[in-house]
Each structure stands twice: as structure tokens, then as C-alpha cells.
Length: 90
Image (tube, rainbow, N blue to C red):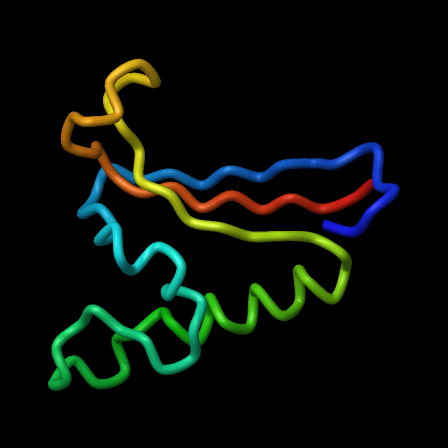
């Protein structure tokens, strides 16, 4: 988010489904990246993430993905799902 922004609203969306592979956390917002099999045509949310990122950044916001760990203290445990966070200036 841009410099000089003092108030931000965060929107957090979590699930308990499969985690995002660690090496893919930064790639899920790339236009042609996918973890789905090639024969899963039309069943790919990747373009939605790309468009969402463009809209959010146009409004001086940020979006990122992370995996949910069982506790904040134990980052070595297997993640419990995925989390997407959107930050937008007020």
C-alpha cells in the first residue's frame, strides 16, 4: 500500500481446504499459473485472482495469500488451510 496511508481495512477470507504449496504463495496471482490439471478446463479461479489483484492495487491496496498454521507459535506444523488477505486504505 502507498506511503502516507494511516488507516487500512483488512478483509480476510479463510478456508480449511488444501493449502497453497509454499513455492506458489507468490505465484497464485500470476495470470498463467495453475496447480490444477490441464484437463480441468474452465474450472480455474486464477483469472479471478489476477483481476482482483489489479483492481485492489489500482485503489492503493494489497492482496496476499498465506497458509493457516495450527498456532502462531508452531509454524512448523502442517497448515490447516489457506487464507487470502486484502488491505485497502480508508
